[in-house]
Image 1 (cartoon, rainbow, N blue to C red):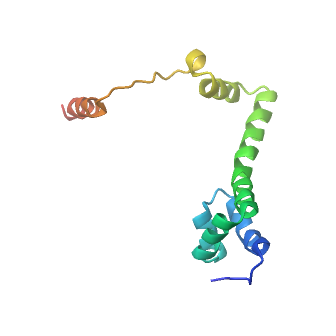
Image 2: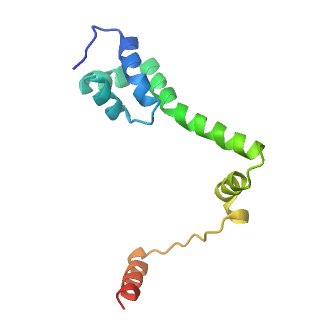
Length: 116
């Protein structure tokens, strides 16, 4: 495993490219060959390290939102429709949310119908 002496910025530099690709911290550490105990300890003891990890993990989300917004600004009907269906469910969603305290009843009925 790759272990620089004590410089947490070196650890973060090793992890950052993987975190920015939607890897979990565990996956990023495996890819970067950073010891599990090291990054776990840094998360617990260094607020700066944990903040940097969180920021890096959010970069793909921000990028995706920018793409979505750009599509809406360019007049994309589908992007606009998707956005409204997710953000204004009551007005625009084509799905109906169903809640049942006994979800297994629904599953059994569906399976029974399928088996007929």
